[in-house]
Length: 89
Image (cartoon, rainbow, N blue to C red):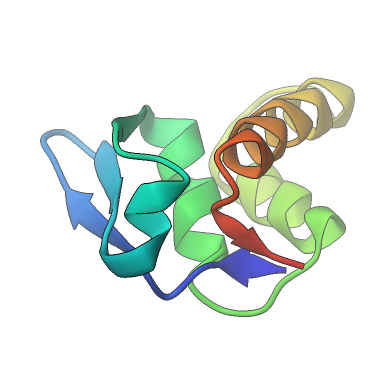
């Protein structure tokens, strides 16, 4: 899976990112997605084809948290991205 090409991801401040839909994707979602530091790592991973497990591995390398917590965070972010149809799967 990866984020659709019509989503532009911007670096915000202090490690956070913003994502907006462009082009035809604006029919599905016309808002703004704001990502905190951990969600920003997830968006970085989704810039290229990846798996949920690889994203959890990337978070585990950056944050000191139980793997189960990181996996739940990844699942929540992916659910949000799916709800606005921002992922290619």
